[in-house]
Each structure stands twice: as structure tokens, then as C-alpha cells.
Image 1 (cartoon, rainbow, N blue to C red):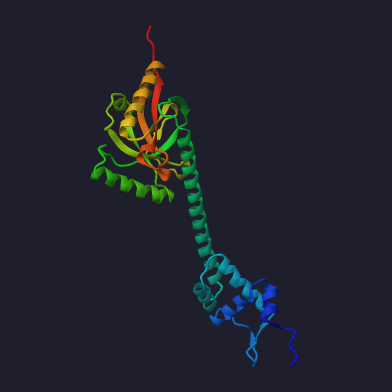
Image 2 (cartoon, rainbow, N blue to C red; image 1 turned 90 degrees about the vertical axis):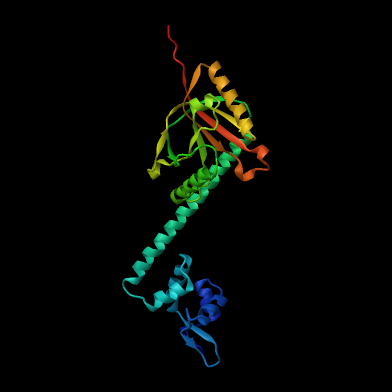
Length: 275
């Protein structure tokens, strides 16, 4: 029997639409996209006009619909169903883009901190000018890192992840005056840097002068780092103001606690001289 020009074999129809013939067999077997004709010998034959139908199915698959979702849409197709489906998929795509952007920013932040930690020189102090930055703050802590403080840390971490997605890094702050007095147990809150575009802000890191140093190792090393920082400040005619902000820099690539790098950034101003 001569084959009709309007009836294409599985291979011909697959080639026409740029897909694998096994995909057509699978779609037929699950009832998603059967051929227009099945001959007595079992051969599948497709109509050229089925290309539009297949293109819709392939497009819906590309935007993330499951087989069952496509089946349901085709059963319930109406003038409203496609626009509604389009809006639903647009929301899914937008959410996926935001999640990927969060992951990209998370990895960039981690890479920047790791690069800075590798250049860190223990005991070196630098004076720098920082722009104003929004801050997010936890509930108050006692600074002794007991069960209560860790509960606050957990709640703060969950808040940051709700706001930013992948965001598991934050630091501690201590009044600069208390740190200068050597009281390194007076931490009052955990902090994280906000983003201006989010409009979420609990406090502001003021623009101005800051002293920065790095501590490598445990808390005893941190005490020595503060001593060097405040010695530098005294010799340079500077006095601490505001807060000292401590941030861990390399927790994702930490061989041991001896290699833990903490960045210490302390607000300061030039001392006034009286004649």
C-alpha cells in the first residue's frame, strides 16, 4: 500500500522536529503524544499538522512542566488555562533566577573573603575609609557564647536566609571603647551587612575612618591583635569610636582552628588637640 504524503514515519517526524525517535515512542507509550495513525502492522504514522502540538509540549517541558502537568493542561485546555499556566511558569522561572543569583552572590562573597584571608598579615594594621553600609542586627547577646547566645545566633541565621537565601555568614560586634579597655567578653550583638536594594536595615555602619587588622588562631591571638591595633591607633593620634566588627574569613577552607582568620574592623577618629 502506498504511503500517504500526509503520513510520516516516526523517523521522518522526529527528523522534521529535531528530536529523538525514542522520545516519540516514549510520549506515545505514556499517552502524552500519540501518533495520528497506527497501521495494522503496528507502525506509527504522524500527521504533519501534529508539529504544532508537539512544539507546545516541548516548550512546556523546557520551562519545567512535568509530564503530568502537561497532561492535565491538555485535558483541561481552555481560553484561560494557557495564560494562567504562563503566569505560573513565569513565577517559577523568576524564583529560579533569584535563587541562582543568590547562589552566585554567595559564592562571590565567599571567594572575596577567602582571597582576603590569604593576603592577611597577622599583626599588620591599616587605616582605611569605608562608605556607609546598612547593617542587620541580632537580638542582644551576653557575649559568653553559651546556650542562650547560640539560640540567638540560630534565629539570626534563619532570618538572614529568609532574606537573602544562601547567607550563612555573620560576625560579632563589641563596643570599641570596651575592646580598647581589653574587655573582649562584652559582645552585644551579631551583625551582617545588608543590601541597599532590599531596604532592610536595623542600623548603619557610618562612613568614615576605620582601623583593620587580622587575627589568625584562637581568642588569645585575637587579644594580641587588638593590642597591636590600639597601640597603632595611639601612635597615630587616633581614638576608637563606635564598634569593633569581627568577621570570620575562611570557615569554608579551614584545615584547623589554628588557621582561622578573623578580620577586625574598628571605627576611629582623629584626636582633637587643644592649644
